[in-house]
Length: 173
Image (cartoon, rainbow, N blue to C red; front, side, top):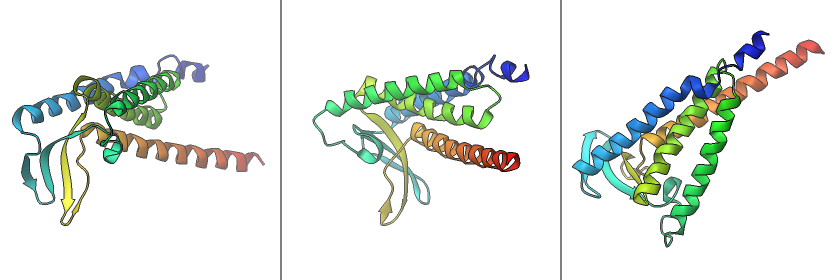
């Protein structure tokens, strides 16, 4: 009976506030940067860290950025599909699966932030530049960061789950 109760409220419902907060914060920061910076303008904030206004018409690390424009719609369709899949996964995840629910929520929030940019602007606004001369990491944004953290969380969750399942299997044999 207790297990059935875990499914009565999904992780989607539990973490919907986090998803909306991160999605909104990502869009707010992107809006602020576009209002206060010219394209390519950089502001040195800390050693090895600048704020810069950059536009990425491609995917991660500017993959496909030099294409003729078709990538906007292909990447948008992929993001919509992944977002839909994440929503279904979150709806089917019990609220007590905290690590899994939070990790999926982070990936969803980031995907929605970058998808919104891509649909509205035709590109994703990036503004965080981390570097160690002469090495420069590609500019990125909050959405990219929460996607990364969500994926790390998924790996940790899957690792812990498989380790626990192995221990339970060993105990039963």
